[in-house]
Length: 152
View (cartoon, one colour):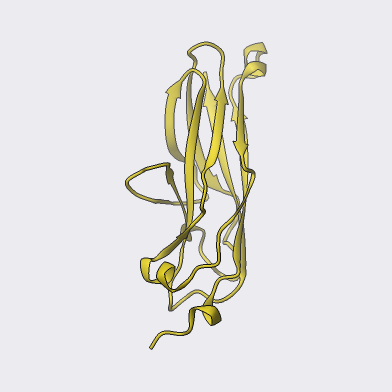
């Protein structure tokens, strides 16, 4: 027997998106940048269909803008800064993928390669959160997902 989704609804996931730059501490490093937009993401309250499907998705994308000199190579890594999303919800329930990607990756405290390239670029990232009828309680969850670009 299922519980009424209104009674089991997760109130929200407030996700802070941080963009960090890593690289050499020389004059060229001063001209490298990464920007995230938006920097705050709120997922909708999941309904029964979301619980049946297994996740609720942010209705937009996070845009990462990378600005590097010329055709410098770069790599974007992602990790989460939090031990959990609150109320015991594991960080692995926070999901991300390149826009239009074929599969979700779970956030982890250790850095994972998202993508790499060269020159200036704009990357779109989709965000979701796994939900489960049996384990999720109605709470406000939160976390900080960090995107770090390494340019050389």
